[in-house]
Length: 79
Image (cartoon, rainbow, N blue to C red):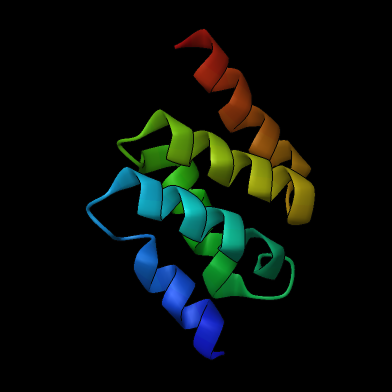
């Protein structure tokens, strides 16, 4: 639980690069952790950085929710 909690906390960092790497580390937890899944959804749909949104969508697609991940990726392609 320690690592997952640290990664969730890092997704709120002011620096987009830190959030990006936190998302990459958090994604594998999304299948079994509702907190990790919810954080990825929030970041995929609401982060200010496109790279963080795309990384979160990729994480959702690969680890927990293909449909949600594809929706966000499609929206990013249209923006």
